[in-house]
Image 1 (cartoon, rainbow, N blue to C red):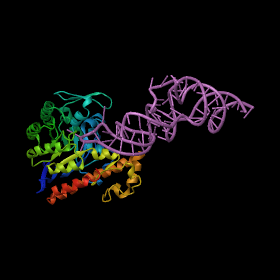
Image 2 (cartoon, rainbow, N blue to C red; image 1 turned 45 degrees about the horizontal axis):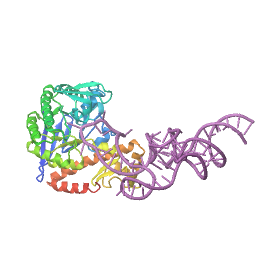
Image 3 (cartoon, rainbow, N blue to C red; image 1 turned 60 degrees about the vertical axis):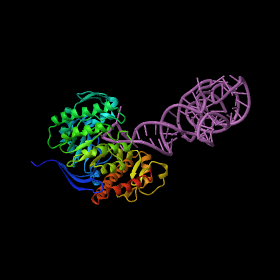
Image 4 (cartoon, protein in one colour; image 1 turned 90 degrees about the vertical axis):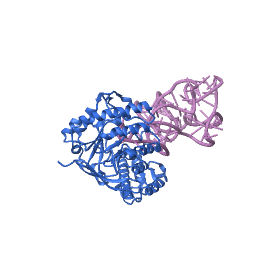
Length: 373
RNA sequence: GGAUGGAUGCCCGAGCGGCCAAAGGGAGCAGACUGUACAUCUGCCGACUCACGUCUACGGUGGUUCGAAUCCACCUCCAUCCA
C-alpha cells in the first residue's frame, strides 16, 4: 500500500525561508501554511461543514478529551468514525487533551501514569493515560492525532517546566507504542515552557519520534508575543525539513505571520470563532469591535474588500444589532467572516512566499493591523 | 362614595429610623478573549470632579427626630375589592 502520509516542499521563500508545502493525508492534501479552524466538540461552533468548505477550510481540529466525555469515543466509532459522524470528509486533527491538562488545571491531578480529571460536566472522575488517549484517538479516527502532553502555563518554574517536558517525552514513548493505526499520523509535541535550555532539549529528544510532523505546544499561554517569537527562533534550527511543523493554539493574524516567517506550517486557534461570538471581527486594519455603539449606524460591511458571505450581504449596523439582541446569526456570520479572513490571509501569505517577499508582506500587514488596535 | 394595597435610580425590584447614592436583575457603555469549562468573563453604570470630595435624590407638601427611602398628616396618581 502506498504511503498514507507525505510532505512535499513546493517552494521556499528566499526572503524568509518560509515554505509552501503539500501534506498528503488519507482524506486529502493539505496545502501549507494552513490555518485550521477549531471544532472542539465535533463542530466548529456555529458553522456547518458546507460553510467551512465554502470558505476554503482544508482541515479542522477536534478534541479527544471533550469527545471522550460526550458523546464518547465508542459511539463515534460506532457512527463510522469522526469524519462520518460530523459529515466532514476532509482531513481532521484531534488534539489529545494535553491542553485540558493546562486549561482545566483546577480539575485534574497529574501522575506519572496519566491525568485524573474531574469532568467539568458532572464531576465524574476520569483517568486519561497515554495508552487510553491513543485508544480514544484511534477510535475517533482523525488523520492527524496529537500525543498526550503536559502543557504548562507561562511563568511556571524551571523545575516544573522541566518535569513537564520530560514527562511529555515519556508519555510520547508510550503513545507511540500503543498507537495502532497506520492511517493516522501521530504528531509529537515539543514542550519546555519559555526556557531556552528546556525547549532545545525537548525538541532534540522529540525529533526521533517525529515521523510525519512535529508540533510546538505550550506557547501562547499568557507570555508576551516577543517571548513566543524568541522561543520559535531558538527552535527553528532544529525543525525537520521534510515534515510540517505545527504551532499549537496560535493564533492572531500577527502571530500567524510571525510564525510562518519562522518556519511554521500549521496553525489552529479558537480566537477567530470565540471573539466572533463575542462581537469582534478581524480585519486587515485590526480588530473591529462591532458590538460597540459607534457602529450602530455604520451601514458598511465589516470589510469593503472582503468576499465572504457576511461582508457581501450584511452591514456592521445589522451585525451589531444581531449581536446586541443575541441572535445566533450574528455570531455565525462574524465566525464565518473571521475564519474566511484567516484562511485568506494564509492565501496572501502563500502568494508572498511564491514571490519571495514574505518579510515585505509582514511589514505591510503589521503596519495595517495596528490601525484600529 | 367606601375599603385595602401601592408609588424607590433608564426599566423591573429589595430595603421599612442611622452601616443608603440605596441589594439584586435587566438595559446601556466599555474591556478581555490565542491546541474552546467561553453565544463567555470582567469593569463602569445620579450629577460635577483625575481623585479626596461636594451636591441632588426614594410620588408631592409639611411634620416628628440629633438623624427619614424608612414614622405621622394631608394631597396627587395607580391597582384590587365593596356599594
